[in-house]
Each structure stands twice: as C-alpha cells, then as structure tokens.
Length: 403
Image (cartoon, rainbow, N blue to C red):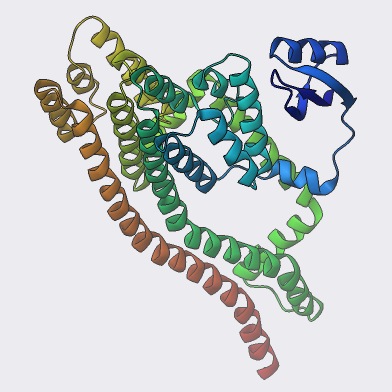
C-alpha cells in the first residue's frame, strides 16, 4: 500500500500536514474528510533518504516513553488541554516514530476519538496495558495520575530488564571472545603448526591430531556448519512460536538450573506489578487479569492466570486457583489472600513486586558470581588443551633430536 504526504486544513483553518498509507489518493482524501480536514495537497511519498530511514528505524526507548508520560501528566495537571499538551510534546520530541504517532493521535482526537481510542491505533508503540489504564483514567477523571503511575511502572520494569541484561553482558562477552580466539587458533594456527611436524615425520600426539583434524574440517566445510546452525535456529524458533513449543520452552525456562528461579522471580514480579498497577488505576479485575495474562511473558504462568480469571468470574478468590497451580510461591499466595480479605489487593501486589524486584537483584548478583568463575574455568581448560596440543609435539621432536 503506497504512502502519501498530505497537506490540509482543519475546521478552524489551521494548516496541518502528515504522512498516511492509503490504496489511492482519493481514498486518502476521503479518510481526511471523515476526520474533519479539507485536503489541499496530496503527493505520493518517494523512497526515504538514508538519514530519514535511520530516524524511522530508531527504536522508541524506555526513556522516551517515561518522559512522554511524565510531561503529559504534568501538563494535564496544570490545566492544559490534551490537544495542546500533545502538540507541545510533538514539537520538542526528537524520536521521529513517537513524534509521528503523537501527530496521528492528535488528528484522531480532533476527528472525534477520545485519547484511549487514539492510542489503540498504535499497538506497536502503546501496549494494551497502557491503553486500558488511560481508558480507566478518562472514566475516573484522573488521567494525569494514571500517566504518572504508568511512568513509574514502566521505569521499574525497564530497570529490572536492564539489571538482567547487565548481569549477563560481561559473561557473554567473555565467552564470545574466548570462543572467537579459540576458533582462530584451531582454524589457522594449529594446521600450520601441525604441518611442520608432519613434514618432519614426527607423529602428532592425540590432542594435536584432534585439533588439527577439527581445524581442517572447519576450513573445508565451514558453510555446512553455518547452514546447520541457521537451520537449527529457524527450526527451534518456529517450534517455539507454536502453542505447544512455547509451553515446552517456557516450562524449561522455569525449571532450568540456576536461571530457572531467576526467570520465575522476574515473571512473578511482572505479574504483581502489572496487575497491581491496573487494579490501582481502576481497571476491572477480570480485564486486568486478561491484560496481565498477555504481558507476563511466560506461557505456563499465563495459563495459570487464565484459569484464575475463570475462577474469579465464577466468584472464587484469586488466591485459590493460584495455590492449586503450584506455580506461585506460598508467600505470594498468602499476601494475595490477605489483600483480598482486607480490600487492599493492589497495595499487596505492589509489595510483592517490590520484594521480588529486590530478590531478582540478589539472584542476579549470585548468578554473576557463579557464571564468571565458571566461564573462566571453561576458558582455562580450553587454553590448557590448546597449549598441551602445541607443546607435546615439541617435546616429542626434542626426544627424536636427542636420539
């Protein structure tokens, strides 16, 4: 579908311009007319320049979203209308994707949509969680508070993800660098080194012979290895994208040694933070469970939440089906039960999220202290094997020369 650049005027005569996809220019004009605009110019968009393409490919990071919510909340709290607030934000934003999205949201609101309906048109930028929170804020008249609450939620979730990434960054770099150096030595250094002894009729020791054969095989058939890796990656990815594959993989993530408890804690923190934020924002509990099920990030826990939603719909307490599943720790079940009985479920959920965020932090430190020496031991063994394969034939040659 082609993209058109248009210029138009709104009901007050104010000029507006933008970019929109449509089958034909006539369809675009009709869309704009329904939105309340009088079109003055329509031109088909030409291929993007490299700079423009780079701007459009730039992702919307956590900082962009947090600042958008905080600034919009402050403007609304100061009594500035939603349209004026969005217009002011669009003028100062540097991220092209977010800027264009806000422009489209502004036009949708001018065309008669409310803020939540306009946000729903951009699901890749504004998730269902945010849209439903905004809808609750519009209904309660506390949109500015809802936006600040989402900014806080988003910041906490981003911090948690950054902690996990930071913990795994150094071990990953260490392992990658070690494997790269090892591959270079085995592929290029060992074969040349071994040729010297082969030409001298010195028999190669078993370690040297193994590395020599492996290096020669990699040089000759490297493309086979690449194809096998790519095929395996595609096959695994396609399997994980199936319902059964996703369930098997997510169950494995919860049970794998060392990383399993960390993944479970992070998922429970996400569940509690999301559900608690939605509940505190006034979103109905059944709708909150539907949204939480989709964003929890684990199919096993997602199915437990879906089962819990059905139980709640029948009048049961939330804690009962969660306890039966045995996927949630007893402390989480107990705190949810107390929250239900005392009428402070959202507060209890946020306490659970705070505790498990802290627990994830400790688990990450523990994981780092385990992984770093483990990788060093593995790299030491690899280096030791390579050194042995290079020194043993030298010792054999010295013995032959002494004779």
